[in-house]
Amino acid sequence: MRNKLLSGGGAVAAGRVPQRSEIAPQYKWKLEDMFGSDDVWEKECGALRNEHKALSAYRSRLAENPAVLLECLKTRDDIISRCENLYAYAKMRRDEDNTNDRYQGFTDMAMSLYTDASAACSYIAPELLAADKSLIGGYLAENAELAVYAHYFDELFRQREHILSASEEQILALAGEPLNAADEIFTMLTNADMRFPEIEDENGNMAELSEGRYIRFLENPDRSVRDRAFHGLFGTYAQYRNTIGASYSSSVKKDRFMAAVRKYGSSIEMFLDSDKIPVELYDRLIGTVDANLGLLHRYLRLRKRALKLGELEMFDLYTPIVAESEREVPYEQAARLIREGLSLLGGRYLDDLDCAFAQGWIDVYENANKTSGAYSWGTYLSHPYILMNYQNRIDDALTLAHELGHSMHSYYTNRKQPYIYSNYKLFVAEVASTVNESLVLDHLIGCAASPAEKAYLLNRKLETIRGTLFRQTMFAEFERTVHNKAREGGALTPDSLSAAYKGLNDKYFAKEVSVNPEIAIEWARIPHFYRAFYVYQYATGISAAMSIAERIKNEGAGAVERYLEFLAGGDSDYPLELLKRAGADLTTPGPVEGAMSAFESALAELERLVPGQS
Image (cartoon, rainbow, N blue to C red; front, side):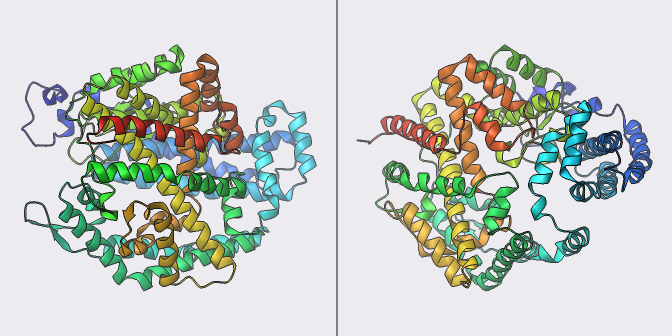
């Protein structure tokens, strides 16, 4: 298979990562679809340096008449979308080979241009908010082109009471860097200054422990390696508990300050209001997961028996209970399997999927100095692009299905929506990708080559739900506890934070796991806590996606049509409304309970396949 990557006749030596020039053209994305050459890119960059200055001509004139307002908004959208196109091209070129100084320079130039353009139009929202809402409403009724922006204006005026005066907003903007210092301090401490110990691996060799390697150590079949990694990591964090405690406490205080300044009753209300999400939804998620913890405990019992352990400890939660499938899935086969798994989405979707595979959307294989991992990107002015580092594993096929979900979401949105609604909210960002992954995974389970492969895939499904729904909801409950304590005037000390976190681990795991006391410090290593009330969206996202996937399987064409409308919805309505129309009503416990039912079903099937189960 490796020889097929080559653009010439030679072979890549075993174990050597090929140069980009050695990858065949059909496995590379076609960034030329964005800009035909670097010269074209540079010409556009030069043009925009002058064009964004035109935005100043509309300052203090937005309430003058509907034609002026429309012209300003269209000019802004044109300039910002073109800046995004410049940046995406430069960054994706750099991702092909991160040692290429030319594209590092392009990336810096594009970011500088984007920053200048954003600053040039920063007056628009405050000036509109200073206008009379009824006047703007009249403009919308008078001008059909301007009426396209109706939801944009609704959202702007909905949050009007939380927007301060221009001078006060300027003060907050100037204070942004020091207000966000806690996150920067945490990042520098944990990524640059902290040093983890070396631990002995399964072969008796000393290996350096790091955050990047930690989960790999926990997946090791040698339990003593898992034990040493667990205690090495959390022992290190414990040494910095006071510094990290002060950092996180400062972040929570910053959130309380911003909520008070912006006239919200609490931090959680402020963060959820940006997507018009009621706090009751957050609380309902936690309550529904709490009510289903028995399923998690049942899975942990299976894990304990499968690993043949008398007692399960916290460092035993990640090691596979079923060996990874050794079946190779070449890229072309993965494309066929994905297409088969997504066939329920209908002919139009499959035709568009074929475009992704045939028309240069995907950069398939690893090459020297290429950015690691996988992502879906692109802009309003381009088709989507996918970066992969495909290694012929089943997991790679599922990752590709996941990224294709993101790409199709963007593709359908950009074909239907004006630019102003093209950037869908984070609350729905993982839904399309997880629908794809869920449908393809269920297809792979149904056509597994052996009972062992089927067991591996079922376990992967269970681990995805455990890590995304159960674990992220536990994080969400921790955040709620901490912010409530701060609002009530309680002190956020390392001891109180650790006690709260340990209590949640006891609730989630103690029935089947010996909850090691060291886990109490894990809060200190979670960077998401510095972006408050963010992680719950992982749990709601997987619940909505699984609900939609189930409807597609059971209801057919009607559910598919509603889902495709969701994909084309972008940011044209509030996230809950878009999801509701797709068949996932997160204002009820239904989607989360449905995800729990899917977890139970997969668990029952795995229990039948794993030897020694009763």
